[in-house]
Amino acid sequence: MVERRKLKKVSLNIPASAEDIAALELGSIVFLSGVVYTAREGVYKRVLEDREQIPANLTAVSNANFHCSPAAAPDGKGGYRIGGVTATASFRFSKWMADWLDLTGTKIVIGKGGMSADDYKTVLAPRGAVYLTTVGYGTGALLGRGVKGVRDVLWLDEMGIAQAMWQFEVENFGPFLVDSDLEGNSLFAEQGELVNQNIEKLYEGLKPPALHRYGETGDRKKEVI
Amino acid sequence: MISNQTIEQAAYEIMGRAAIDIPDDYLSGIKGMVNTEEGDLSAFVLGAMLENYEAATEDRRPMCADTGLPRYYIKVGNEAKFDGGFIGLERALRSATARATHDVPLRPNRVHPLWRTDHNNNCGLNSPEVEWSFEPDADWIDITTVHKGGLFGSDYRMLFPGDGIDGIKRFFLDTLIAFGKRGLACQPAIVGIGLGGSKDICMVLGKQAACLRTVGDKNPDPKVAELEAELKELGNSIGMGAMGFVGSSMVVDCHIECGFTHTGGMPISIHTFCLSSRRATARLHADGTIEHRTDPQWFTPYMRREGIEWSNDASSKKSA
Ligand code: SF4
Image 1 (cartoon, rainbow over the protein chains, first blue to last red):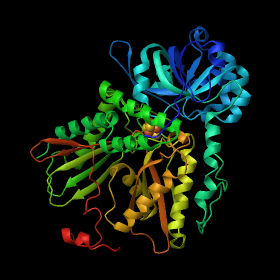
Image 2: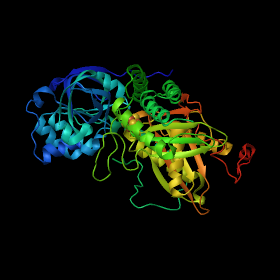
Image 3: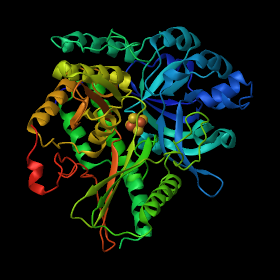
Image 4: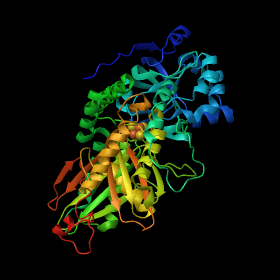
């Protein structure tokens, strides 16, 4: 077994306080307890573009927005059975984040794959918000275990299971990794830089193909998101 | 005679098994990688995945909430007898998909590409996909389900004979680097490569190579097997591990499947079977018994035949 640095572990209560959030370090492992709500393109469009109201008490109950669609089914008793819980790629929601954070006071954004370093610097950090990424990303069963119940679900009939706004009661919900801090640093970007240093070498001596394609980036250090 | 009800029940049962229980071959592949991974973040991710597989099996809940696209691969023995015919079989597969979606539960992922209509049962236009193959001298039916995840990690390119192995390596690196960053491909993955064929079959072969061959399996053509090993090593030397963090855990295994192609071209496709490499197979015997396994045994010598007549020794006479 190889020697490895041990990562720091943190437990947070939701709603998370400003001090708790300020203390988070890139690459720390986080577990959450309290209420976490889901919102993705369906909810963002409905609220920010079609001007529907968010639940009045949302801000008081939760300041953690999970980019996720659960595997859920009605339990036949008026409630829901939550199977696995897995995040969806967050970079797609970039254009709504500033308005959403302003409207809801959300301070923790959770999802898959992080957002661009630029979003952290100009959107999340200035609003006192950080980004946590799910791990793997397929830790759906572990996350499912952390969900103790459904506190409320909104717009289920209109938008379906995937896009509805779920409020989950969670306990020791995780693991997540801290991807951004209040200075707008990004763990993914830092790691990406390190990986980039090796890339040119991999292509050394490999001749380029005969046919090129339009729309291709020639720069392998660029990301596709 | 295999009854239609047996078919439906088996197809339903493997949907749950695939969603919940990680196949042993993939699990041991990941365990091996945890031991050698030097990147602390990447190693942490792999450790969390191992815990996740255990939690899934213990709680009987899906390992990943993103069901991906559940689909079927059917291999029918040439002597198999089943009631309801092929139409009945296809109906049974749809019914099993819908029931499993509700019962496991699976996420109803299937929607119309434009109208986003969701029947909430993972069935719809051309869904679930059913691919067929046949087996000589057999009276059973093999039903395999694969829940392939991932909006990211697949690609296709027309290369030319002159591009050679260099072209293959470049395309392989291009795709893994692009989709490996931030772990969009949910690596470490079983990477499947389709080489040759017509364009559509090139994609089909690559996907089957990723999803229907187990970790540790080698192509029977020794030169292709060598290339598989070389590409696996190349992928793991990118410097990227799980979630795109610094590390070496990118490719659990690499499988290449070839098809005869246009004399002027060398089409290639690549597919990554993710951290939730979900597959399960049931063999339905003529006497109605059902056997379960996680190795689909899809690429039989018959599948890889080159000649016109089929006999078992003919399969050893390959072009390489
Ligand atoms: S790619 Fe696989 S592990 Fe990742 S979210 Fe999709 S199904 Fe889950």
